[in-house]
Length: 203
Ligand SMILES: C[S@@+](CC[C@H](N)C(=O)[O-])C[C@H]1O[C@@H](n2cnc3c(N)ncnc32)[C@H](O)[C@@H]1O
Image (cartoon, rainbow, N blue to C red; front, side):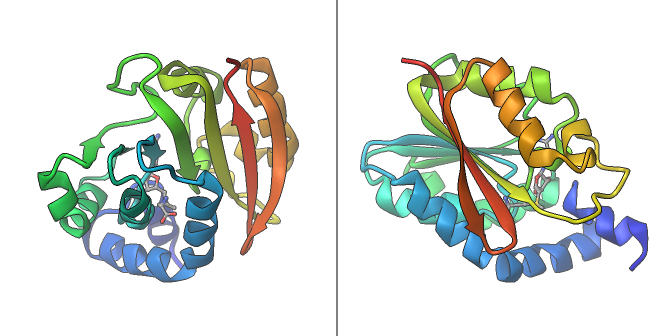
């Protein structure tokens, strides 16, 4: 497959972006279900998804957060359009808010979320030290971070995140989280072909 089509994962756009969105919905279903289960969504939870893609996790989580709020950020206009369409009723009711943007500059106040989830988007973070500090900033004390990492035997060398390019992604991510001041940093196991890591912001 030409590299341009593979790179759709980083910022889905145009015709191939639509195709890629459908492939993600189908291929990531196990990881989506695992992530929502592991988030243990409470009715009043405020949750942020970084890199929401077509918005399946946002919509599933919103089902449980009946009095809470699910937010999402993604740099792809196409994904914003798809995910907004999927959750249009929840957006109208104010239970979901989706924004165009990047993990490097999260447009929410400090300590705004109980939980943050990033599913197959960590590999696209340009500056993981800076970006994880943004995530920590918007989490409430004791807030949960759930990272679902796309596992590959040979990570492509165009991935922007140096930790994901390194072939030591899990060890590098655990170290990043510890250095950023997270606690209870652990590998939760596998969801399909993805590795799941959780950590908490100190209370
Ligand atoms: C492989 S898709 C995964 C989408 C969704 N989480 C899922 O599992 O179906 C990666 C998503 O991350 C988004 N993304 C890429 N770079 C990002 C960044 N720097 N900050 C936030 N999201 C990003 C892409 O636009 C894309 O929608």
